[in-house]
Image 1 (spheres, rainbow, N blue to C red):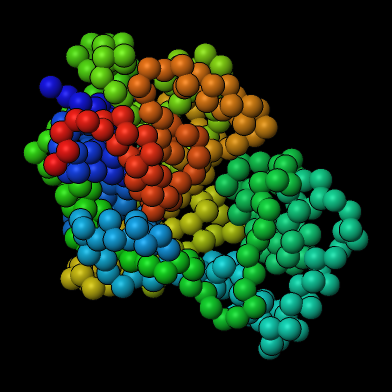
Image 2 (image 1 turned 180 degrees about the vertical axis):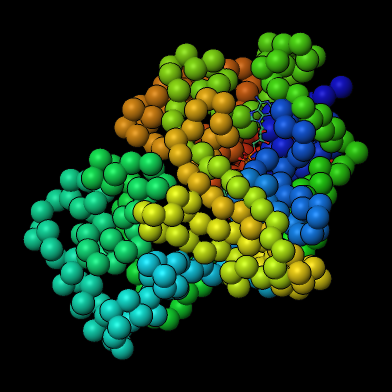
Length: 387
Ligand code: FDA
């Protein structure tokens, strides 16, 4: 007998399943339409080189949430990896996010923090107090035209496949500029990569006698015994798939951006000397290149081969993987309608990035799943077998 069906084996679904199986002794069935667990955090070793490749784009773990940190450490140890990003503009490489090093290299200057701050403030005053009407004006307003045009404008145009003058100013509310030489990408207390890789971590979460995982099973495929029509109303369901899909797009589709990845094995030991290089210029079609060996300098990878992945960004069609919510005003309105509909579903809980139409980092998905267990699922199952 199954106490709970979890649709989706990403971090959100796995966290809920693991907690309820371990803490309450419940029997949980996880289904996923993919042929592997882990959702977008899944990784696999590239066969020719053995280098771990994050199949759905680079995943860097970071959190300041102590509860999440304690929880994830039950399943994996973390390396001391610290994320840093560089950007290649007009044949020159600069540190990101924009910091004192970037500013001084770009302006061929040796400003201290106050002088750099004054310079950017002066350049950002170009609009003279006018409210920015589009993303282009917003960018200039936030960091001044020279830095915006060099590092942000074309990169954003590539991400959205749209001229920033046609994009709403609301897409960016702030562009971080650091007036120190610190180019550490994340500010969180804890950061690192799982020592044995993401898939080992994800598999350990699912490794419990009360958890059954059934792959290649789409919740909407009525030819499978576990499907929406057969299950909803019979057994509590945690649904972490797309919320609009659940209601058969009755209120229209929520829009997403997707990414295309072009992976290549190169016959060199080191291609770019760093894990991530951004390409903010218009003449290069991709937005960045990942070189996976650099995520694990502690591992013994081949010294004459490397794996790179070029990343391209575009609007998603229905058949694409949905990666980042576009979140237009129409999307927000639609989401509210869908949220209303979710309340009418008997014992179905909607969670995760697809179920809530929200970008969630891994630590956020795990934290939200722990809260759902505390606030809704534990009370629902109270009275059942506490272990
Ligand atoms: P997730 O998408 O992982 O899992 C949902 C699962 O549901 C999928 O396995 C899917 O197949 C399944 N599913 C959907 N519909 C179904 C159906 N009808 N039937 C059955 N199964 C169905 N985070 C971070 O902390 N650091 C990082 O560096 C990155 N990097 C990053 C890069 C890119 C390109 C993306 C898109 C995302 C990140 N993330 C990230 C975010 C991270 O991937 C995210 O936090 C987790 O995927 C969230 O887990 P969920 O379980 O919510 O969704």
